Amino acid sequence: MSDEVWRREPVESPCIKVCVVHPEARLCMGCYRSIEEITGWSRMSPEARRAVMAELPSRAPLVAPARRGGRAARIARRDGPASG
Image (cartoon, rainbow, N blue to C red; front, top):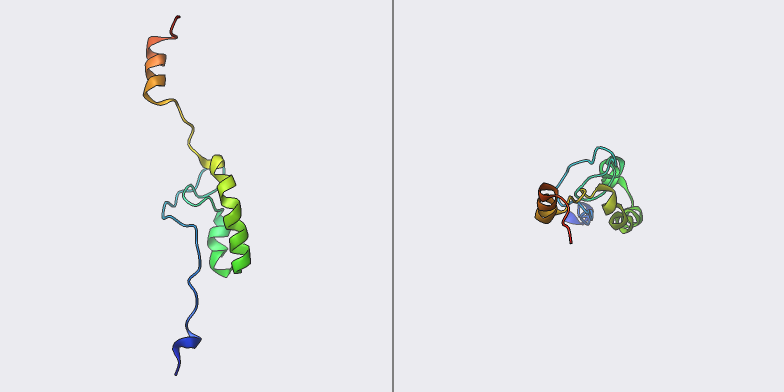
């Protein structure tokens, strides 16, 4: 009996194993997919998966944490506005 019947290509996935859902955007903060896309991923056609993957980079800003300015901003807040 041939193993060819059971062989299939692995499902391509953007998952990076950082599975945290953004509370407002409702997107995974690791791969930017929606919960519906994640749960239905293995049932999607390769074409549908490619279409979602092409859209993922544009979703990154929706879940990116707000930058607060780092150390320089903390110092400026502590010391007040610089005069000059």
